[in-house]
Image (tube, rainbow, N blue to C red; front, side, top):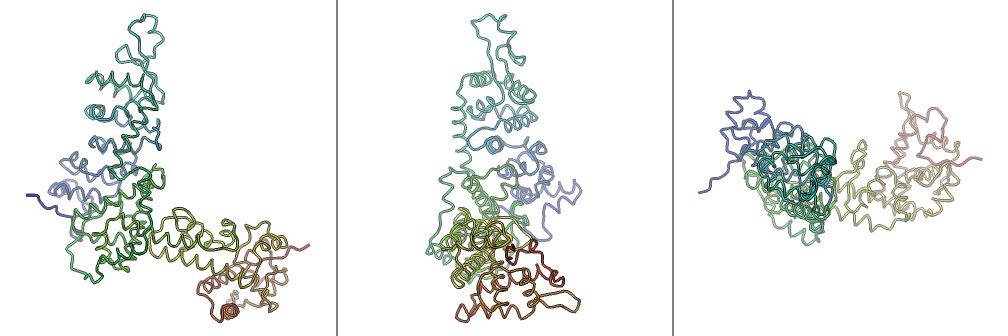
Length: 595
C-alpha cells in the first residue's frame, strides 16, 4: 500500500530552511533526519541558492537526497553559486543529473563550446574516480568523441613503421606509448590526463574506442549526432524542438478564454486551511508576480504543488527555446520563469477577479501551460490594438519618439513580436523593459495606448496639423535640430500658449518674449516665494479642449493634459521668477529660430 506524502506546512511553528539554519548543527541534523525524503526535498528546494548545500549536508544520506532533486534545480543552484563552489553538490549527483549539467552548459545552440567543455571536464576531474568511470561508461559515444575533439588532437604510432623514426616527433603526453595527445585548450593537460588515466587503467577497450573515434570520426557528424541525443534528453525536461516550443504562444480565441473562465465556479468559499506546501525558492523571489505566488502558497497537497511547480519550470524551458534565450546565468533562467509565472498570474487574476482562493482552484485544475496561453492572449489583445491603430505619423519609430517618455517606449514594447512592458509607464523611476506580470501591467499599457491615440486624434484631426509639415517645414523654423527632438507634449503646450496669448488654436513656435508673457499669465507665486501653475489652468484648458469634443474631453486626453501641465510646471516653476528663458534648456515649449 502506497504511503501518502506529508507536506511541510507553512505554520509559524513548522520547519523552514531559515529555522533549521539558526539551530546548532547537531540539533538541526536530528530534526532534519527525522523527516521523510519528500519533506527533506521540500526544504532544500525552499532554501536560498547559497544555503542549499548547508541544508543537504544535514542529511545522513546526502547522496540520496541530492539525487532526488530535479536536475533543473541543481542546474540553477550551480548557475547561481558557480560550478567551482558547487563541487561537493556536483560530486553527489546521479549520472542523469550530471549529464543534464553538461547538456545545459556545453552547447551554444547546436555547437559544442570548447571553453565550457574544458570547465566541466576540469570539474569532473576533481570528483571521485568512480564518478569519472561512471561518466565514461554511461555518456553517449558521440558526445565523448565530439567534446574531446574540442580539447585534444590524437596522434598514433603506426604498427608498420619504424618507431625510432616516429617517436621523436610525437607529443610528450601519452599513456601507452602508442597514442599521443596535443592539447588545444589552456590547461587541458591538467584535467584530461587524470580522467583519461582513470579510464585507461579500468577499461582499456573503452579508452581505445574513444581515442580512435577522436582520430577518425568526422567532427561535424559526431557533433550532429550528439546534438540529436541532447535534444531528445532535454525534451523530457520541457526543452522541445523550436517549432513545438512556439505552440505556447498560440493565441486563444475569446470563446476558449470564456470556456476556461466558466469551468470553475466562483462561489468557492474560503475554507479553513491546515497549511500549505513550501514553494520552491525559485518562485519566492520579490520579483515574482505576487498573485501567482499567493495562489501557489495556498496549495496543500504535496504532489499537486510539485506538479504545478514542475510544469511552470518546464514552461520556462519552452520559453527559453521559443524566445531563443541565451542561458549563461541564473538570472537568465529566472527571467524565463518570471515570464511564465507572470502570464499565468495574469490569467489567474482575470479568471478569478482577483480572488486568490478562486485562483487556487484554477491553478489546481487548469494546466499551467493553458493558463500561460490565456495570459499571453490577453497581452496580445493590447498588441493587436496597438498595431491596428492608424497613426498619422506613419514612421513607427518616429511616431514613438514623438509621443515621448514613457508613452513612446510603451508603444515600442507593445510592438515587439513578444510584447514587453516599459516599467516607466508605472513607475517613473524605472527605465527598463520587462515581461508583463500583472493585470495592472496590461491596464497601464492599454491606458498608454489610449492616451497616444487621443493625442494623435487631437493634434492631427481636431487641430488639423499636417503631420508631414510638422516634421519638416515647422521644425526648420524652430530651434530644434531634427524631427526626433519634437515631442507631442511640447506641441500641445505650444498650441496652448498660443491660445492663451491670442485666443487662436494654431501651432506656431514662440519667441522668447511670447514664452515669457505666457509664463507670467499661467504661473502664480506662493507665500513662500516659489512659483506654481494657477489652480484654474487645468479646468480652463479642459474647457477649451471640450469645445472640440462636443463638450466632453475623452478620459485619455484628460490624463495627457494633466501630465503635460505637470511637466510644464516642473520645467518652468524655477524659471518663472527669473523672467528670463534660455530656450536651449527648455523642451516643453517650442521656440522660433531667431535670425
